Image (tube, rainbow, N blue to C red; front, side, top):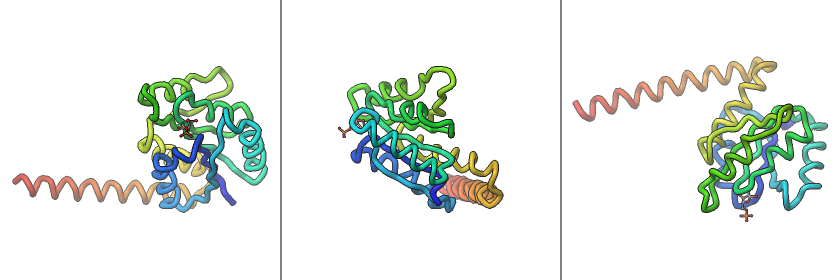
Length: 165
Ligand code: RP5
C-alpha cells in the first residue's frame, strides 16, 4: 500500500524527482508516482489526491517548476502533510517556483524543501521521518541509514586525509 505519493507537474521533471524515488526505495517505503499539473490537469490533481488518500497515503510530495502551484493545490485538498519541491526550469532559475511553493496562506502549509535534486532527496527523508512517528520499522531503517552515512563520511574523511598526507 503506497503511503507516500509523489506528484510532479510535468514528465519533464522526472530526472529532478529521481533522487526522491531513490531514497524511498533505499528506506523500503512504498510510493505511488504520477504526473499531475495544478494548471493543466486541475481535475485530475483533485481526483488523484482523493483516490490516494482513500488508498492510505499519509504524505504527499509535490515537485513542480515555474509558477509552481501543485503543492498548494494539493494542500488545498488534504490535511495530510504536503512536502513541496521547487524545481529550476525557467529564466528565473527556480526562484519563481520557490516563492510559489513556500508562500502559502495560514492553515494550508507546504513544507518546502530545497530546489531540485537536493530538495527531492530531503523530501523523501522528511516523508520517512513523518511515517516513522507511527512506524517502528521505518524508524529503525532511518537510524541505520544515518549510521551508514556516518560510516561513509568518516571513511571519505580518512581517505582524503591520507591522500594529502
Ligand atoms: C511546470 O512547468 C512543470 O512542473 C515543469 O517544471 C514546468 C515546465 O513544464 P513542461 O512545459 O516541460 O511540461 O508546471
